[in-house]
Length: 563
Image (cartoon, rainbow, N blue to C red):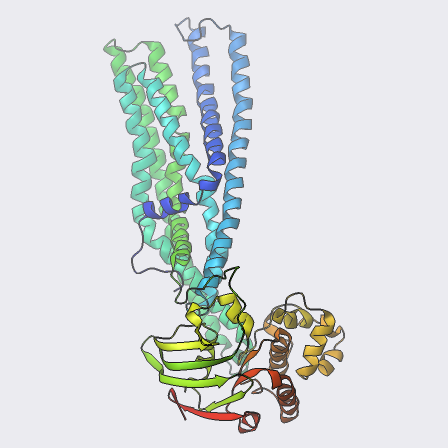
């Protein structure tokens, strides 16, 4: 599972790491908290002032004795208007922070994925990756817009109200403090422990379902051909029902938490009334204090109630945060070497594998392997599938690092060569050419960003692609569809070869470049390779004997050994 850790972090650890990302926007967060505190105080004191108006009408002493009834109504009207404006300002600040940070986090995740690929991402669950990049990051909006500032606001409002209520009697203030702590801290922690594991289970199941749907769509032709539609549908329904049951459990938890929170709030509200009446009988609190403290308590649960409700969505949000943070913190297998501005360009003089040993985890691929690739020569490598041919090319590209020995370009270990300069020196044509959902011209131009149309056409001609492209209605502007599904395997492969020709690097790595081509197109491409490679060094991997005829020297590879 992408981004999972062996040991899951606690909710506090996840929140502290996510809060750390707010640092650049701390001033806006402070503004949101300030506006939120003022807004809640307006709402709370609106009801308190109403109570003072009642006391004034009854002839009781109030802290607004020097105000007239008209003044009182005017102040209440202003507080009502201010409450709306301040709430809007708070929400605006929170959502500005949330969406700004989501953009920053997406940028960080893409940067992390770029560092992890291909070594850490090959064979990974793509549907789960998509789930992390989309829904998991999107769920963090709840945390940034509706969690951080509400916690700070609830703390400050509770502190202010405890001091205000406590000014009438210290025991009443302590009772209010107990109410705020139970509703704003005890209940959310208790509810979080009840549903924490289910939140992660739901996010993981959601990612798994995404992967299954994506896999089913990509394999639609095979599913129809072999009559597996019913079986795939049953599996999809099974996974959907399982996810639905998890969501029901989470909803049930949410409902029970809301009911319990409401019950506790009512208990503390009436408890405050009875406690104040008791103190009144003891002549420790007058009628004004009884009414004011009760109204203040009943009207000030809003901020802590918001905290209590956070734990419902927070379980899934923290699970999403865990998955996102795990991607950001995962260490790549291959660390890129930064380019130094003063460092000279890499001049290609040949390549070699020097006693290389390499294994994918416990599977040994190459053992004490050595090979010279002199400049200006075409080196053919022939062998059965799984013998390590493609792995050698990936080591030359430094997609992986060797376990022992060294891979050298121009006499320098690739682990000590600036990655960008290394890749500029090499062109790599893989067995399966990936096409982006774009035009044919733009897919070829990946080999050389900013290439002119003339350069693209010339590369296509050398790859035996131009005549086919010209038969299309939109020529080079024809869209290839998602994953190039409008093109055949041979057409995709020729686009890959055209990219390599356009890149025009001195060291050309070809992994089965003609495996999907007929003999005519293979002959044309091999002729182009022969003509183009008079000034290049080529490593040509193929199982076809006809392709090996191009090579100056042919090596047979068997279980990581060369002969």
